[in-house]
Length: 114
Length: 109
Image (cartoon, rainbow over all chains, first blue to last red; front, side, top):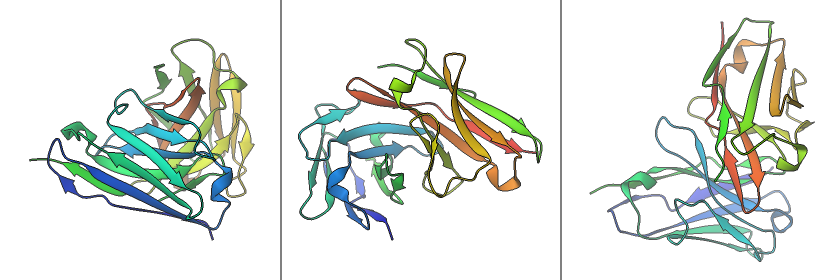
């Protein structure tokens, strides 16, 4: 059974940092690009970042470039998102996804508020 | 970054057919944009329905199909069921980025 399990979501003050993790199992994690996608309360899906299968290429949405860093550990089948300089508008459920094989996690909630 | 546009809302009768579209602000959508379609029901994570314009996953109901139509990506639902009421999102790939559409809220009524 394929599983993507996110963790690390929390309440954090503006300007703070969080590190999200996504543990993958049940498919060949190291073969696929991995994505972070977020959804603010009552809003649509927004792409945040993605990383190539071997970690050699990373891409970011304009809204997070320079503040967020995506990384992966293929030996541990784990995806990470380091989020710095968090803003109120970063508040959302963050999903990890392996888009091409069609797999999504259940999401982890990040709340940025004072 | 490009803006990807979808109909904000559509309504289809049970058993009816509806087509959702996905356009790009910087030109016609082609197979090179690798269109994906996702379904999201309230309180649930998204589920992927279609990849690379018209390819289905093993879990994709046969009544859903993808295509290119009039310079846009399209998702057609033939024989709508009550359980198809959901939000639908498309995703297009560009150089260095991917962009989701704003989503279509589909009502089966």
